[in-house]
Image (tube, rainbow, N blue to C red; front, side):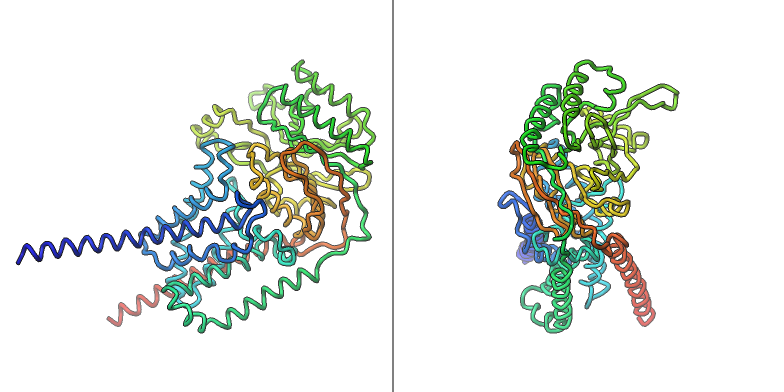
Length: 546
């Protein structure tokens, strides 16, 4: 009899283990499904445009797991969710460096390791309206992860809607954050509705039908606002620009590469000049040897030869040129010795004269800047050994002036941050001109993911955005977010376009900045803290009664 009981007990324990493992695998599958839907919502390997409607349900499986998981498992699922989501979304990082595909997803694995338990707290403390608290917390998370040294904007849910322009134009009021909120709401709501499976959803929907009506009304109002707020720039000046896409990756390095880039840029510029542009714009690092530095010091004869070839060409040009370049100079160190420092820069040429210079303000973490040399010397030394070229930060929001058109030039990564373009506009820029090098990715989806964020820079400020890239996506975006021109990726050539110089009105976002994201952050945290206090009071009351 004891033997039979022992066998039955062991069999029961195995059944429990299998049941637990089944739950774990189901939850991991749901998280992986959410990560896949999330990545497909943006430009991806299947379509360069992305499946933007998927964004509205992409996070449903993830929020179902938040409800289903226990307190130990939620940390595992959070780590897995962050890592897999960004492997799927940013797979092209492997072209930058094999380790990068682990670094960025690894950072997000840690973020989600913290985020999902916080979401579960909201679920526990607010049984009826936890999904609204989760929505606020998600918005706060999206905003926080764009700040500081590790700030990174890829994967913000609102950006997936860049083709749905009536909704995108809501960003003139709220920045991208208001669009994100409307996109994420269905996921938090349906994730809560499906917490007990499909059989519990009808009852949840019945109890929350008013919430659905309110959401539909707000969503419809946002779309109506987007349609009604479309600016009329038909009477604005048109700025005729030539955008040169030389399709040479400067990361290959060496004078032969730099000379090839110059030859191609000159060839395409000469062709473009036949169509009478008012200005010619080259891409980020389209010319690598530091022009101004070599004009002053001339300590590298080989590089100086290439610089002199460029200057000879510039001396004959009838229009201004905008060129992405390294702006190097000698500065005194703490010991009094002269040392060279470099800035990722944009130069405005009028003839062979450098009329104005912009130095990049927001540098890419790890690859362009690492300010923690003293605190984390082993990381700094590893980056140096990997031949990382560090730049120095600029501090001035430069506004260029070419024949009466005022424009500013966020460089590459900088156009993914709304606050930077906003500051350029507030300093007097009439057009945003982004110079980018995405050629290192060898990926059209990567270039498209970058470009889709530029659409929001246009609609947030009701100003035109121009993107001149060395491989893609070279484009002109009107103040309403419409792609007026889009040049094929990874093709040498040039694009002529007329850019509306619209200055008719300032938007609420230009005036107030990221107020909506900050409001969501503080409301979410405040509500969560209040929920924790009330939960503690209720628990204390139950203990006293018992």
